[in-house]
Length: 63
Image (cartoon, rainbow, N blue to C red; front, side, top):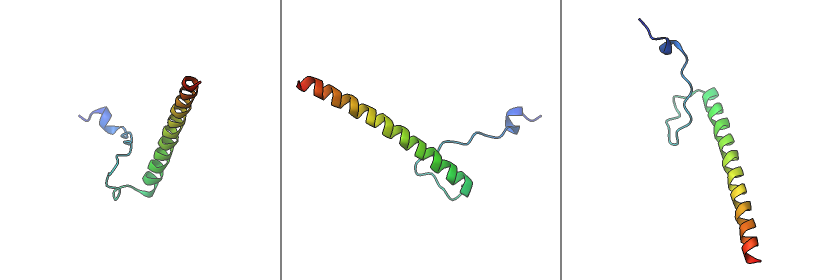
């Protein structure tokens, strides 16, 4: 008897750096690009926030 979990579509895995891309469709590649662009935006926002905090601290302690 088949397990119910086997019948469900599997959740797409997040992109793995260096992964073989030849097996992915154009739609899958487009989705991964969107995923990675979103992650880049998130990383840049976190970096900007940390730079602002550091700048504020540097300014405070130089005064």
